[in-house]
Length: 192
View 1 (tube, rainbow, N blue to C red):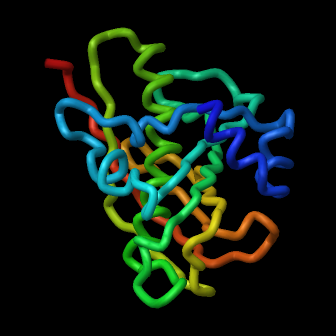
View 2: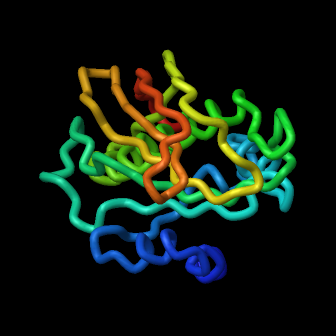
């Protein structure tokens, strides 16, 4: 993580975000290869020098409320991604399907951080997981690639097993490329 922070800090808007006391770098679990092949698309296929070169997630330094079994204490995450030219659909423009993938991924990062915290609190051997039910994507402007983008996911509401999230992809300086909103389903099962 230190090398990624050092690299991204060379970009002024990234440095400002990384130096803010309001945000804390945290692991992006889906970037870690796993023996059961979970997250292999994001960790391996998209983890190359021509795809997603660097990826760093930030969560709020101050968490909201108390972390209960059903609450999501982390209400927003910001993930910085450095994109290479191996993601293009048109010259110097990221493929639209990949852009939707970035939105889906940052929403999943938000859910995963909360689920891990809740599983630790529960301590009862249950495992939480989430699946995308729908993701509506609105393309405002083409996402340039190569580039460094800021992907943000925010919790809209949680209704039982349904988690509603909104997200954006922007240039980190106010230009919004893509917005989206989706519903994710939380699954609870006993660990094997």
